[in-house]
Picture 1 (cartoon, helix red, strand yellow):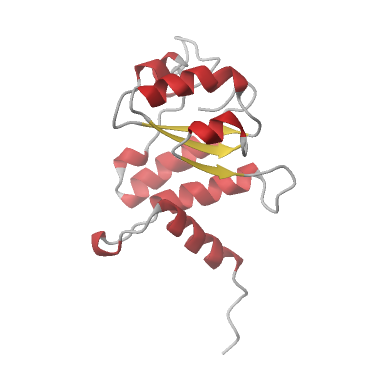
Picture 2 (cartoon, one colour; picture 1 turned 180 degrees about the horizontal axis):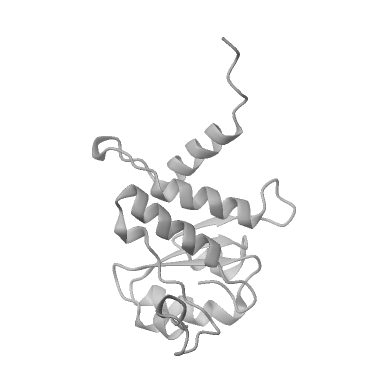
Length: 155
């Protein structure tokens, strides 16, 4: 879910791809849209009411470039219902405080929110063996290291 001004449709599309490529169907998100209409295609017709219907075992990823004041009540209600809340974007503030995990992308950071969303989707779909299961932040860090490493020396 994003804000009325910022819908993370690009991240949702990448997560759908990662879910298919990694064989991890639970990565495929439901994009919750503020302006959803019943006449929209099914994958675009899910409105904010879905947040109230979320229950234990589900995860809510809020992507917002700024503190989403208009969403805080819904997010808090979802957390009380047992939903795991993740936040991407706005750092600090109430959203980060109520999130189980948050990744801040402050304005003026080296990477912008769109770039970080690409890294997050790639790290989320990275396969790792059950024996070497790493946390999401570890996978994201490893991916960032690989992408920012200097080119290999010539032969």
